[in-house]
Length: 484
Image (cartoon, rainbow, N blue to C red; front, top):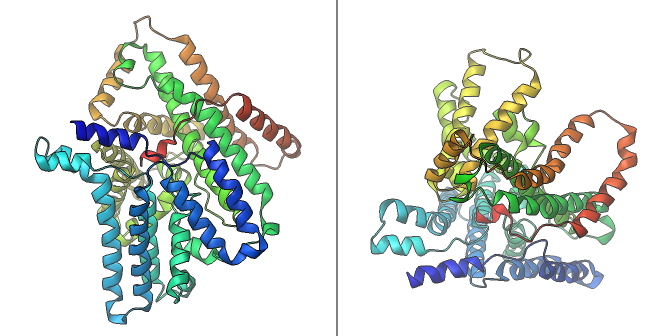
């Protein structure tokens, strides 16, 4: 027990710098200055790599060893795939992908395996004690992308720029791609063939200031004002605190958590995108107003877009996609989403969450194949309400990884209709800090048509967000997706 307690304590202190912390800004400013100083232009990759290593190792230096091992595996494997013996390229690619998966399984899923199959034994105790390195899901996926893209590159000319022959230059490029602090620990998931062609000398005059500013302001607002204030309310969705709360309060809290997880992760993604723009790199958008989706497939085209596209390109399509039709398509959807659920966390509740999304995606595909469609028969906003409600209830599996606690919450939601504990203060502040996310989506629907007033009020909106960041930020907290 003392050993396990020590591990838990170590992990609790092992988060990297937060984007909304003073140490991060003390790292960011000199990094930017060194990066763009003319006499340092030839060392730009070195600067990014050094800053990224400091960022990742800030609270737990030993994590850097694992990151360096991952960089070594992927640098060597990708180089061997392209420049090694032609008859061994498939073997090199297979070994590279396998080693990435071994690292991911060992450090992320050993506790789940220990609890599920070896509980009470020495092996189980050992597996449960293996710590979860922050960001491992993201940088191992990017390693897989690199190796697979390098292998495909021998047939696809567009991929030729992802691997260079000089080993030192190749190492610098791959280290920048995988370790870049902007997206290292919580994405967006970056693909090698999208990022590596951008690796070249960057110039201060080319910084896209407007888009960087917009991404950073909106991102910090969503995280610090919306998500960090909502977390103080949604804390009550914790076993056993929610058991004695009124059904209305439980429903509002669940709605608030749906707003929080969007604001937290979309905020992180926007900050990452804005930071990358400051260094001359373009990362893909990760969210596209997902809560206006009218189907589950549309939701997954709008939510965590980088992961959705990764799973489609590197798992769903290699499994066969929809090429064989019928049962095989539904099976491939289910496999992809269950594995995508487990990617989010080493608990069976995440697999259930993935199973749910795989099932509804398969059912949507089935109704489409059978020619059954409600399009035009039911107003779109009712479709949107149904999808949002379903997705929101599924988030319970994220907030309460213990599946038994999810069942209790749903039971309390149905049973606690007559108890007096409504908690109006919690309801008020949950609703208040949910308003910006609702407005964010409604404003998108309203502004899809050109409206001159939007351009005039933008400076006021950004000014208001900056003001609220300064005066009404919630208590600092790590990003929700750090746990994945």
